[in-house]
Amino acid sequence: MGRYFIRFSYFGTQYRGLQKNVFRNEGIQIHDTDTIQGAVEAAFLKLSPKCINFPKMTSSSRTDVGVHSLCNSAHIDIENKYNKIYNPNQVLRVVNRYFRSCNHDIRLLEFIPVKENFHARSLAKSRTYIYRIVKSKYNDEHRLPLGEFKHSFQLKSENFDFERMKRATQLFVGVKDFTTFSARNVSEKPIRYVRNLNSLTIENVGPFMPHDPLSENYEYWHIICSSRAFLYNQVRRIVSTLLALGVGKITERDINIMLQVPGHHNWLPQILTVPGFGLYLANVEYCQEELDQYIIKYKFSPDSELVDLIDVN
Image (cartoon, rainbow, N blue to C red; front, side, top):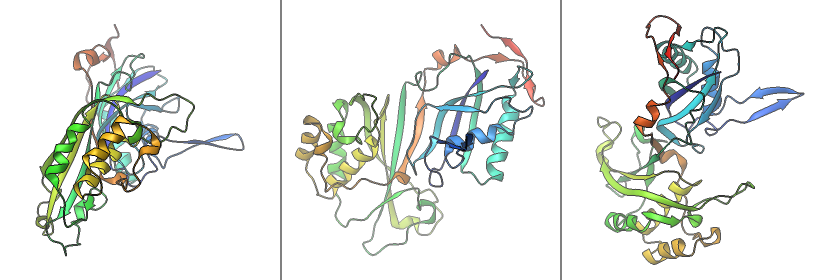
């Protein structure tokens, strides 16, 4: 079995999430291609020589329905009858051509042969998310720039205190119990709700399409947070809480209570959770020295479909 480390990007609005479901119909296994994982695995079936196994992708970071990624990572297991490594250049060309031909909003960024014991999720050191917000400068402006549609959350509020929201970011940084800021656990597997939020910052940024005449009518903000791992809905609930504070629906005391008295029942009903389409997985960080220990060296040949190993030690 050949294992490869991949990095990939996508817009999540057209998919039913990242993780695929496998259905069975009269004993026949049907693979779900309406998810990002399903689409990626289907793309690897187009390689030549053909895979002798169905590709299996294991993502480092799961994203919810509608969430985008600038750079997610995973490992994928594929094998050919010659027991050789696929040429990374050829794979990038074939897989991305498949994505374009099928109108998939997915791009394969990197394809690196690694050892069998490499695991993209367990070796990841941290993850960085960005939540993108746009706010009109004028109360009667409702025409959202085309590039921001389904890629940014439009904040509709005449009175918003950005400075108050910025100050409140420090309430979340550090080791906290984020039970209140996560969805309920529906599985039997126990979840550790105490997490270390490494950083939480707010930056004033520019439009996606500066030449759009509507773009000058808006302000643009990124809420950026980083941690080794996040709970389900944690980022969106933190963002929602900060926005609720900025519009005056809640106070800093309310946030402290939700953190100091953690519990799903303590989530305040006046806080509306922001949609997934404003959220981006910006990057999954690894220790490069540790990563280098797993990368398999090969003899480079730009035109061949397979390449030869230099060593596997």
